[in-house]
Image (cartoon, rainbow, N blue to C red; front, top):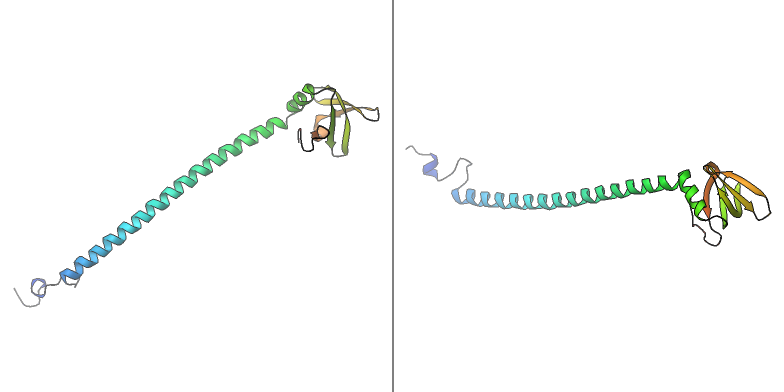
Length: 140
C-alpha cells in the first residue's frame, strides 16, 4: 500500500484517530441517551396534562348539564312545588319580591307579598331566588 492511506496513517474516514473516534461516539451515544430520556420524561408530562384536561372538560360538560337543568322552568317548578307556603325572596330585573309561594304553575309562580298583594310571576322573569335568611341559597 502506498504512503498516506488510511491504514498507514491510523486515521478513520472522519480524519480522527481511532481513540478520538471511539471517544466521540461514546459522547454522542451518551448525549443521545440523555436527550431520549428527557424526551420520555416530557412525553409523560404531556400525557398526564392531556389526561387532566380531558377530565376537566368532562367535569365542565357535567356542570353545564347541571346548570342547564337548574335553569330550566321545570327546575323552578320542582323547587317551588316542594316549598309552597314558605317565604321566599325572588329576584327579578325590576327588583326583589318577598312573599309566600302559594302555587307553582307550569310556567309561573303565584306568591303573596308581605303587603298582601297577589303576584303571578312568569319563570322567564326570575333571575334568582332564595329563602329568607339564606343569602345565595336557592336558585340563580
